[in-house]
Amino acid sequence: MTPISLEFFPPKTDEQRATLEAALPKLKALKPDYVSVTFGAGGSTLAYTPQIVRHLRATHALDAAPHVSCMGGTRAEIRQLLDEYKAMGCKRIVALRGDMPSGMAGYGDFRYASELVEFIRRECDGFFHIEVACYPEMHPQAGDAHMDLKNFAAKVAAGANGAITQYFYNPDAYFRFVDEARKHGIQIPIVPGVMPISQYAQLRRFSDLCGAEIPRWIAKRLEAFRDDIDAIREFGADVVADLCRKLIAGGAPGIHFYTLNRARATLAVCERL
Ligand code: FAD
Image 1 (tube, rainbow, N blue to C red):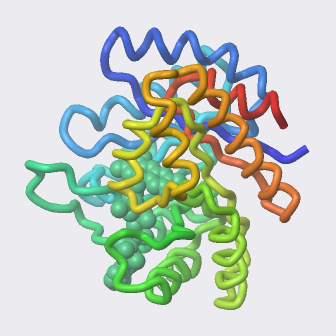
Image 2: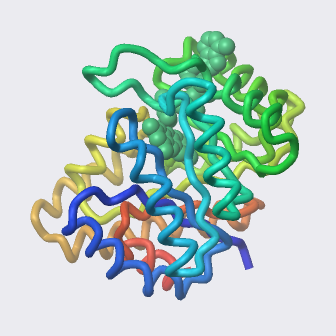
């Protein structure tokens, strides 16, 4: 069985908390290898990730791994955060640069994820298993795909143990990327990140921001369904399950689902698998 992991974002309102609580029992039935919790960017949102990680571990007995980004502040602040996660029993961390939120003045002490990985490695020796992000369709700010791959290699050289990709809908992008990574001497597992489809407008928005391509044939069909949510869900689950089948058949070491804190779309894909 291919291991799966599930990604959540930290809920901020009572309504968001209720949505996540409702989704958790259903998603737990998938027996995820671990779950991860994204990192908000700056200010009061910093406290949400540790809160939810603690909750998922203590109340739901899930192996919850925090995302930590360079937006987490100074060396001292990140050291404190790492100590907090150690005390909770977390052994895995997803280390990222993060994106600068509008209105935020500057990065913390680290400019790139590779610097954060190096810091975590140095501070905590081998304590944490460190995952990093990578981009089969290239990070939108990278000069070119070759540079992006070299920058990915720098994160591995700094001590990353595994990588999770940005989502994509073209399996060839993943397979080609993994091949090129191997040619660059990158030997760590590269787990595809998969975004189930439950609606179009939001997916379009996310994809434009993060540089993930929605192939034309998928976009055109989703557009044609307009407000027919059921049709979008059915089609989306078929497409994403097919993608996962190809990834698994091609040797993907796991699947990381971006759940957006909802069960339905992820479950629909897993049921088809
Ligand atoms: P980096 O690896 O630092 O790369 C960022 C850019 O800089 C790339 O274009 C890279 O090519 C370039 N670069 C790297 N090193 C150098 C260098 N030395 N010189 C010049 N250029 C360089 N965001 C959040 O805010 N919170 C989250 O929890 C979160 N979770 C994520 C989880 C996954 C699996 C993924 C794929 C993304 C996640 N993101 C999250 C989004 C991520 O923070 C953004 O994509 C961000 O823009 C890049 O982060 P990174 O860690 O890949 O950065």
